[in-house]
Length: 289
Image (cartoon, rainbow, N blue to C red; front, side):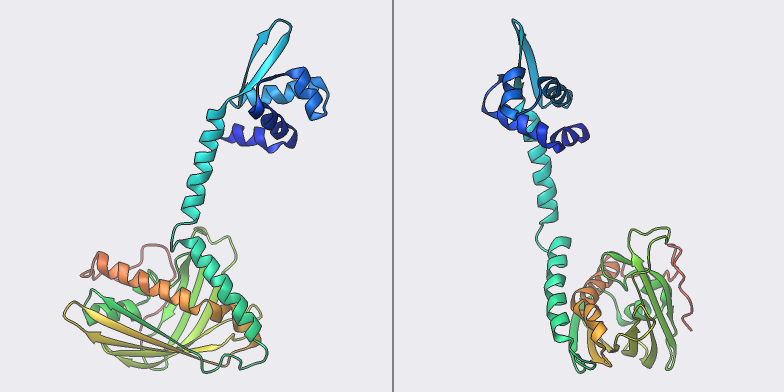
């Protein structure tokens, strides 16, 4: 496939392919039609032949070249599979496009400080685990690290002190940045407001701007309600202290936190009785006390 793509990447060779798609032709005629010298045309045709795109045969003193359609069909099929993968319904590209629309709207709205104050976001998930286990995943750093980011990110540092006045730190990187050599994607700091084990958790969390200032403060309130099948988790976000530069963060709240909760639901559904609070990924899980 690499040889095929390399061969087609040259405009002169692509011109020869289009000419041969019409009918087999000799080198001399191809050179004339392409407006090139014959030795140069011969080299291009040899490259195409090595890539499996054309075949040739000698007739008298002329060498006739013909297109091999199968190679192009294989390429078209491979490109089609790539396009289908990227364009799958509800997939990463759809999320990217959705975020782009939200980003544009929020940037237009961010005219002055306080522009998003009072904005709220609500989330509800029915989880297949009892409130006690859900509570642990909401408050223990080792468990938080497994779900508390959108799909394309990973937690690289986390502190969650589950007591009133307790400190919160959340740092995250690209999910594929395994060695931490790429830039930190984001960092947020906050404080715990209220703790009612297995029932209610509320905290404040502020994403940091590149200069270290606060983008905004999110007041997050989580309520756990037991059900016959597990727990209903009701989450409410409320924004205060929004800066003009906070638009990019606020544009991603609905998508990003929604994906995080979906990851939480998947973790609990996979093993709802898991009591292991350790994190074997190497994440700095900080303190949970």
